[in-house]
Figure (cartoon, rainbow, N blue to C red):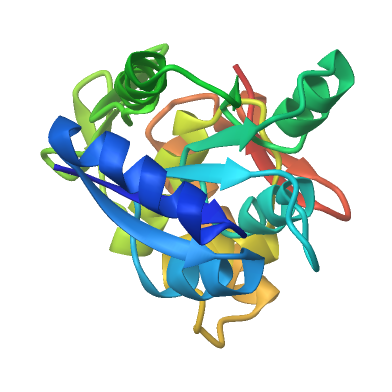
Length: 222
């Protein structure tokens, strides 16, 4: 059963969405507004988020941008607005899909199911002989195992899963060490150096893929 966070400033809409989704085996958590939603997201894991745009205090665009600082959870924007620029704005801020009110129940569920199938993280990623295997907790190059610490393994795997996306040091800390961690940026830099050294020693041209974006953070290039 997938866990979904429903975010809206109208209780009636939250209740309606939960009513739609319950028969389709979604476990619903309701958040009345952006502040309540953020508190849930920072404390719990969700498989997907349905996010209304037009909310007071913090609108859906602002909340989507805030969520993307520390979470990759799939987001579908739900709104009555249909202008093309609104759709584009939401997608540029990190939303994964968009549906307008009034919507068809079957279409909403179909979009949610399709998004979850599409973005389900791969358990194995292979790049020119370098294989990251989550199930076996192993990184290897041409079948030669490369010994990494759990944090190093998680870091390189996360970057490989999201090629060409830049992650700041703070974002990597939140993702790998945890939101409440007191880890500093230089610890991330140290882990990056170790990962590069270990993979380079195995013969893989790591510097062609694991890039530093000066002043921002790191990325894995295709």
